[in-house]
Image (cartoon, one colour):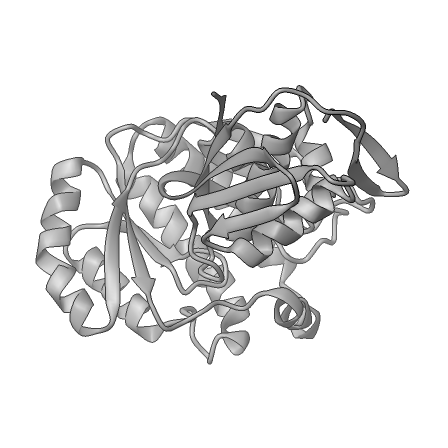
Length: 336
């Protein structure tokens, strides 16, 4: 079976033509942290603009094979099957079997839906010898509406800033991409029984919010260009962390009315992040709508000390801690 890409209006769909040899495609795609928005005002013509980072864990890992019919197994099987059907359409007696061995936690602020959609689309494309651009995959998975960092994390990893949405339907352009320092570690804080805003609730939340002050957007852009990125480039965690914490406070304060009156979706996550800062971590905040929180340290040893100091306290509050690294490569796609 060979699949070709065909656009039907604005939708990109694969079309089945014939049979081909069997193979297994394995895709591993990184989670991403959404660290804040540049401009929620949009007065100069573009809105949003996202700051992000690809991390090595958690991740999406799946395999795709040919099958007599479309089927899905493992984590997020219902969502995975729906994506296979959307991508491949009616294949008339031949299909794909996808097995999701690892999944990024859903509704945790880590971009799980985007990475699953891109992983399945890329796997089908690789199976059929096609190369799809991130824009093709974005249209296929209907991703990148506000943020381009999920697409960029899948394509190239690293620290990412996108240029926001203009007046048309194109995904936000990638404006900055640089490697994240190898030695730095990210302390991720998870809460099992909490979920961030998503779907229709997210759309409604954005529509209900007041106008974002243009002066705040200007200040965030100033922080990003003159403190956050230089701190990253010069491996100055104090500068990077100071800028990031301030950005999180501004953006989180704007969304507080939709998060129970706090900059944190989960008060417990917020308390633990502040404990991490008290013990030397920098750059605390939550990813997207949360509840996942983060803090940064400058070495593996510092990460281990912080983990050992707080892991039992975290468990007592129903939280868990994961030590992650920045991932400076995008998704891996292998055939066997």
